[in-house]
Image 1 (cartoon, one colour):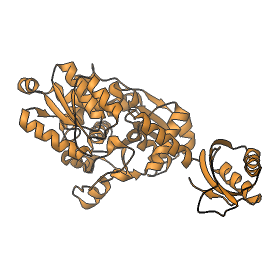
Image 2 (image 1 turned 90 degrees about the vertical axis):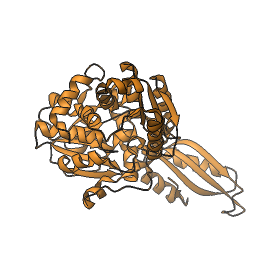
Image 3 (image 1 turned 90 degrees about the horizontal axis):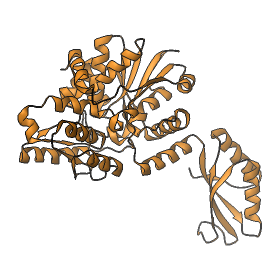
Image 4 (image 1 turned 120 degrees about the vertical axis):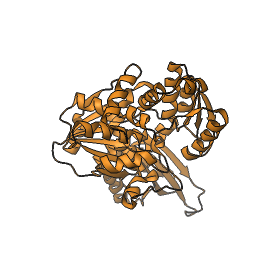
Amino acid sequence: MIDADDVLAARDRVRETSRHTPLEYSHTFSEMTGADVHLKLETFQRTGAFKIRGATNRIATLSDAEREAGVVTASAGNHAQGVALAASRAGVDSKIVMPEHAPISKVKATRNYGAEVVLQGVDYSEAAEHAHEIEAEEGRTYVHAFDDPMIMAGQGTIGLEIVDDLPEVETVIVPIGGGGLISGIATALKGYDSDIRVIGVQAEGAASVAQSLQKGEIYERESVDTIADGIATRRVGDRTFDVIEERVDEVVTVDDSEIAVALTYLLERSKTLVEGAGAVTLAALLNERFEFEEDETIVPCLCGGNIDLNTLTTVIMRGLVETGRYVRLRTVLKDRPGALDDLIDVIAAQQANIYAIQHDRTSRDIGMNAAEVELDLETRGEEHVATLIAGMEERDYEVELLS
């Protein structure tokens, strides 16, 4: 098991490659939660995520023979970019296996950093199986995405930066996929002050650690399904599980809707672009997934910002729907001239903005003298949506909330 000295040694190895990322006080989220919230903005790290730290530390410890043979790994995206850049800087050949449906932005970035990319498998686990086949066939060194002491130690340098910048920190919230990040950070923090609380967060559609801790052994999911693709692993690592058991105080989960809302808040209120895996920590805080005191000094780690633009569009829309900023309604009008204008007047009186209208006179679900209307509306929040619907119903419109 790694210890604090391993993390301190890693800091010297990664210093020239990784950045000391900002730790910024958030007035917005402090006000929303009642805590003293500081955001660890690892989104500003080279490659856009924390993975460069562990990759640099692991490659720096390769033997001469291992450097000559090259490295191989599997990744959903962020670890891929970290290994690609670290290997290129060290003059080591790298081959990266990524799931077939990995975000195209992450695939392109990995290639641009100098790696050969192989697309194989439906998720990280299947990609890893193929990467191990390449390891055996080509004699490359496998650089594990999380279950490696040097990877963990490299990621732990984030914890050192947090206590350097905020010595009074009381609680740090960390995403969990395979467990490398939280293992390293927890090791660094507990080595500095054993009273610092470490909270782990998983996406509900990829949660395995809480069950593993309850069982006392690793639980593996059959599949994963979450917008937080950076932590979408079926199981935690063997080595990381041991560290989590010993040094992590609590593990909680958040669902995709909560992740989407947190991501949207970060964009709108903090002007910070964070991927789903990075937003889970703030989601856990905003939804009070763990107990905390008034004015408790809390650091959510925003571990990465590499989100595919198509995914971003979907997530933002989901976040707007969840917060009542965008709504889709269905109603039925009498099929007569001016009926649609009357409906629009009601909506305008409630100060909702029409984004789109679909008017259908041929639907089988309505009478021959009626027309079905679906409206996409921009609104100002849940109370505004309720007021809008009430105003329509007062005018005898039957309203169905579609989203």
